[in-house]
Amino acid sequence: MSILVSSWSKNVQSVPENYVFPEGRRPGDITAPVCNNIPVIDLAQEGGLDHDEMIHQIMRGSKDFGLFQVINHGVPEELMDDTMSLFKEFFDMPAEDKAAYYSEDMSKSFRLYTSGMNYLKDQVNSWKDSVIHQSCHPLDDNIQSWPEKPRRYREVVGAYSVEVKKLTARILDMICEGLGIELGYFGDELSEKHALVVNHLPPCPDPSLVQGVRRHTDPNLLTLLQQEVYGLQIFHEGKWVGVEPIPHAFVINISDQLQTISNGKLKSPQHRAVTNANIARTSLVTFITPSFESIIEPAKVLVSESDPQLFKPSPCMKYISSYIAMVDNRKGREDPELPKLCD
Ligand SMILES: O=C(O)CCC(=O)C(=O)O
Ligand SMILES: [Fe+2]
Image 1 (tube, rainbow, N blue to C red):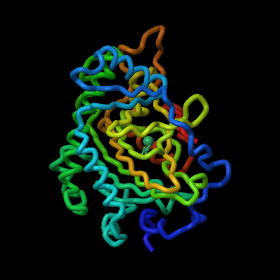
Image 2 (image 1 turned 90 degrees about the horizontal axis):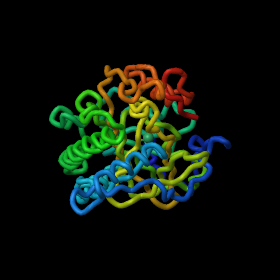
Image 3 (image 1 turned 30 degrees about the vertical axis):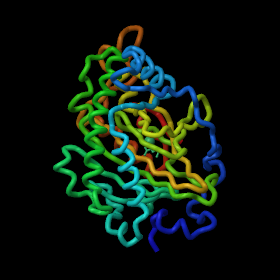
Image 4 (image 1 turned 30 degrees about the horizontal axis):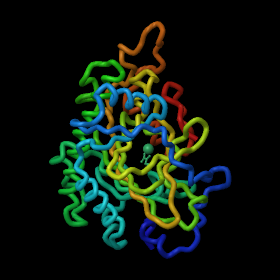
């Protein structure tokens, strides 16, 4: 039998034992109401918000929640719909078709996997299948490792990653403006890597027992997420709150390395994704990461006598490897120099 949740979960009426989290580590409030204070920012270039107001809202979201949403952002809505439909079709393919893409080898540039990062190492499994494209750009160098099924996979996902790249550059420059650092600061090296992860959480007979995407902060620079079904939650002021699924919006999540570069002015929120009883949830998550050799440290202009440096310089790779070690061992991050984050 396939170990992919998307292949066997239709045939079960209760949660198999290896997916049931022990009491105390269960998700708790899976129906947390959506938080209406998270900014939803209209980025329309004509007839939309005043530019200064956009920057103000971006800063408010990034400081108070570590997160905001954008609409009218320039990524064509039809392309967002096509990409979402394509991935739903991917996870609905017969188990034999999906088996060709399944791998536990984390070094692969494209793979389909299940649970956390490694099904075999997880003490308790997560109710999730995922695909990862380690690198989307340059497209021509990477696209050959992507699936050819469903038809148009490479064309649609390729176009999606080109559009998301443009939006990323725009948002990073607005963050520069808000922080008062030079435009282009995040160009090239600091935003070199674009990985696309698609998480698929099939309907679950009892969402209160399982984890979809477990509580974590993102170890990269910035994350852009597309969702259409409720499930993403952030831990805010001591409780879980939902992030409203808004059609054709992107959720923009400040990640650990941007928290460091901003010298703690922007925060990297703890978040997770919960499952639903009746409906599958698919999310498209683009992770922007500096080149692994980049040294991540607070921007000089953000450090002063009244604003002492909060983080020591560390290579980007250290953030990523400490995250992977944490996910593998389910322990907190041990390196005291890195933002301290997880359960
Ligand atoms: O699927 C989601 O909504 C959250 C995914 C996420 O946090 C991640 O993949 O890092
Ligand atoms: Fe995340």
